[in-house]
Image (tube, rainbow over all chains, first blue to last red; front, side, top):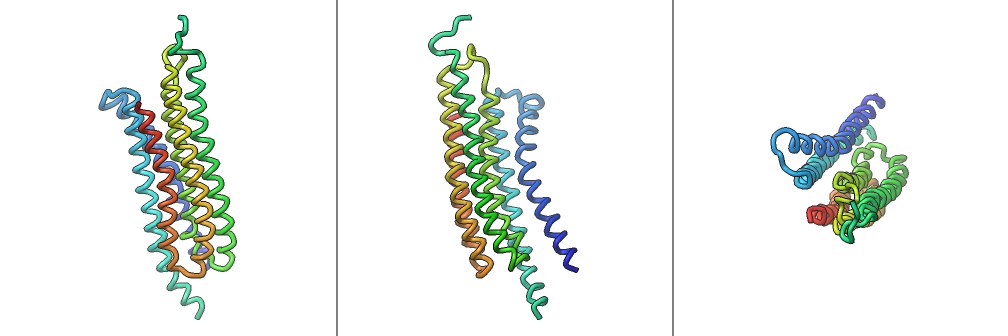
Length: 86
Length: 157
């Protein structure tokens, strides 16, 4: 009974942390290579700057999702903890 | 090809130092923030292990400061080239961009570490402190974001 919520918390934290770490880096290189090679033939500085900005935006969206998840999830946890005290 | 005054052989040195400074100082701040708030989480989790998911947030925010430095470092490193095509001016600009994000990240990491430590310990005793802790952490994080904005603005010069 104790093992399952712990594993759930670990899975959630692991998912969001990997999203926050991998997401911006993948976004940076995918956007830069697609902008450079594929669709638009913009020059190096412009594509780098725009992919950096997009990477930071993706980073903050992932962070916001994690904060919302942590905030809403521990509200549920609070009630289950009250049950355990009884 | 003889190197002129505007394109000296040591021109890329400044750009390389900028790329290094960006990631070194940001990582220094992120390491301090992670370690300082990590001790708070470890002390708090002994009594309130159900709050771990909430308490991880300062660690994640400290990691984000390092990602700022990484992004600027990649930007500068992709702009480096051999001395014959890399002017001294660009070297200075890249050094300034790296130092801007590096020291801002250092400051943000210190703030996140101290706030995270105290905030996580306080949240264990008064859960309503959580919103305040998040707000203070966001304001600390924004210091690093300012450095990133200035660095990207400098990089485009």
